[in-house]
Amino acid sequence: MSFHVIAGTAGHIDHGKTALVKALTGIDTDRLEEEKRRGISIDLGFAHLSLGGDFAGLRLGLVDVPGHERFIRNMLAGASGIDLVLLVVAADEGIKPQTREHFDICRLLGIRGGVIAMTKSDLVEVDVQELVRMEIDEFVAGSFLADAAIVPVSSVSGSGLDALRAALERAARAVVAKDTSRPPRLPIDRSFSMRGHGTVVTGTLISGSIAVGDELELYPTGRRMRMRGLQVHGAPVARAHAGERTAVNLAGIDASSVHRGMTLAPPGLRATTQIDCSVELLARAKPLKDRAPVHFHAGTAAVEARVRLLGQYARFLLSEPVLLLPGDRFILRMFSPVTTIGGGVVIDVEAPAVVRRHAPPAARLDRLEHAGPSERVALLVSESRHGMSVAELTARTGLPDIATAPDLLRVENWIVTRAWAASKLAHLRERLEEFHHENPLQPGCSKEDLRSREFPGAPAELMDALLAQSAEIVSEGETVRLAGHRVTPDLDETSALERIFAEAGLAVPAVAEALSKSGMSAPRGRAVFQMLVRNRKLVRVSEDLVLHASAIESLRTLLAARRGSRFTVTEFKNWTGVSRKYAIPLLEYLDREHVTRREGDQRRIV
Image 1: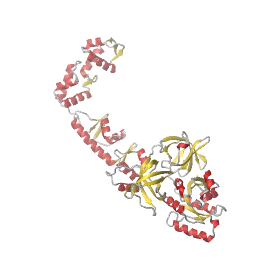
Image 2: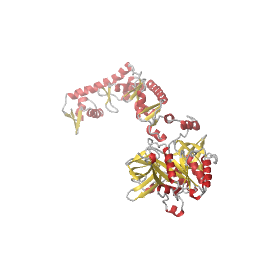
Image 3: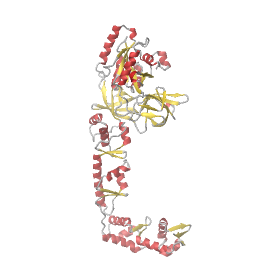
Image 4: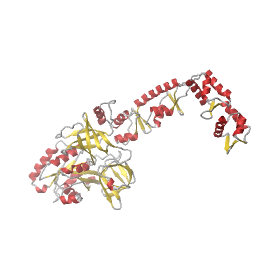
């Protein structure tokens, strides 16, 4: 099985990076006409190299970056996805300004290993090479390249190339494979059209895996599209994995609509314009000032940003949305002069605007920075009003599987803290106690009313799941009540109201009139009336017509004796003695109950 590692060149202009890549791979990464004419690299170049030995199957992707200070923006776009650095130092010049800046960038991006190539070694004597080696040793002392091999090479004569390949192979062995379990992300560094294929984009897949036919979203545009084809190092594949240089053939979009800085990823993530971060400034940089403008580089994106200081942390307000996740590294450059001043790590991609009710921003970020996956999820959930969906947590954390700590409760695809659940149940008990006190003749509170007041924006199943955990609250159909609640009507009041309807037969008074005759207060009378309707003692024929159940039964008996016959409204009025005001709603009720069936201007008793 092949193993893919991405190496990126770094070093001062004219130290021979592009010539070295060509000598190693046979591929000229200067593809632009202007690069050929000027003899310098302007944009990113790409090559690949197969390495054998006892680590057979190793495929080394090489990203060749420009060395001129004016093209640092392009260098940063290429450096973001590399696993190890091929630091190039010319033997006839030694450490130069862009050597230092490129080295700082690699360190700030968290690159952990690499190889140092001393190019143009054929142009100087051995003793000069030793002096340059000593300079390099002093330069990288105490850094991630402190133990890196320093290999003298000549791209012209080919001397040292085999030793350099061996050193690259050893460095590649130590590379930790990228996480294929996390959501796939492909920061785009190139977009172009190919005849017969359409739009093709390239980049280094920094996490996850993607397959032909997958639907991905182009961030931050929100456009969704399917992948028609995939290539890794120029060869067609069915699936690409994290750590591979990948070309994607996209359907349904023009190449001019896609540019460097965009990212392909699954739908459901979110590009952001506000991130909270830990920051490391270079020793030569001045301290950041609150609200200062900076150039912000992450992945292949480069945007302007403004700094808000949060103690030892910082919030960056980005001028354009960028798809970022906690753990992503970035580089900061000054506005003027445009030089690299530091970098950092993203901690939160959607921090709350007001955090005073939780903890001071710096304290909160300190917790997040050092939290494990489950602790991070618990903190984010605790800050939410009603918990968070798994999809929301994935967008906030980038975690593929949302781990639930002991103090969290998962309900389907929703997560809350157990402390919140306990507090919410206590609050619901209080609300139901109030409801029962104010409505003693009601069996319970409407479940939908309770849900809309207490759980706005939460999924319907969240309240149901909480209620299922409580022995003190009972959910029955569309009502919710306390387990100890029982409807205890006053029998005299109930009988008095029922009697009014029973004695009226089919010629009942309006509901308001009947309640007035009962002698009860309006709220009490209404509660008793609703209880009689629920208990089917009273039958609601229409909005304004309510009959006693005995009257309905008598009407059914009257009609049963005439089953099969047809009749008119006038005949029905004569049989029952009711006015047309009552006859029409009664007949419509009987139609609904399938006692009668309308046939033109008549009805048939069925």
